[in-house]
Amino acid sequence: MNNRLETIVDLQKYPIQDLNSSLIKEVIQKCKKDLDQFSCATIPDFILPKSLKIMNSELEKQLDEVYMSKQSINAYLYSKDDLSLPKEHPKRIFMDRYNGYLNSDVFDKDSEMKFLYEQDELLKFVSACLGVSPIYRWADPLACHAYNVMKPEGILPWHFDSCEFTLSFMIQKPENGGIFEYCPNIREPGNENLEEVKKVLNGNRKRVRQLKLEPGDLQIFKGRFTLHRVTKIEGSRARYLCIPAYVLDPWRVNTPEHSKAIYGKVLPIHIERNKPRLDGLAD
Image (cartoon, rainbow, N blue to C red; front, side, top):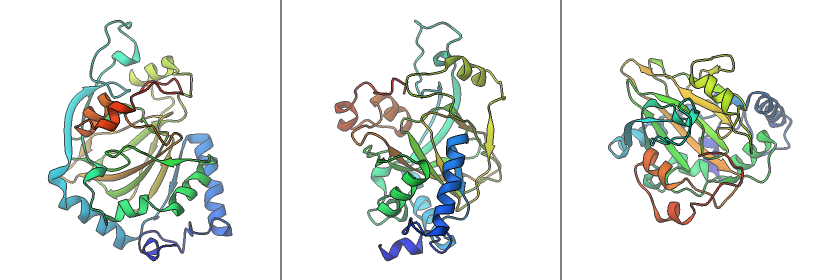
């Protein structure tokens, strides 16, 4: 194990370097139960306070490189309307979005978060919590471990992720708002469950759960199968989150349309690997 890991993760409380320890087995068991039932699990105070400060300062030093975008998008992260579909189809329901990303390709090579993402100890721990193996780090060079930045008045509407599994590390909380809301397991491979998705987009809150993350917390989340959003940021403080991602297919990256809309640019890899998804779900 690299000694740097113990300066980032609270290994006393969460010894992820030893998955056979009784302490971490308990954590894994609880996470797996929560993920199976709610598609989401939270581990409090996973990141040490000193490391949290380093991550915060890393991001703030590069705020001028954050790609901020304001646009109207649907739950599949597209901004173009498809007139061939019925008017009430979920793909034709558009919502305001205002948020931004510090793309993974501009992180310093010795970045705290980049280092953490590249550690096998974290990957194996997340895999055990999910009960899914193997999982892979995401090959998308812009999105694999991006920082999400939501400024005052920022909002992230209902959507699905392109990657199967997302981690969220809360770095800085806003004064108010910025609540994570989600609808567990609303779709699955081969089944978009459009009627239930449409109900949520139209305001039905029967399936909706809320999660209040604190700085240092780790959230493990099945973002491809779970509709989710972040409510509007209120007050003068921004919300900072890092969202490292894991996938089932080590070759897959974002579609060119998705990459352009969310990360502000398209790289050759997005065009070369733009093939239909095996799970049959819309991106």
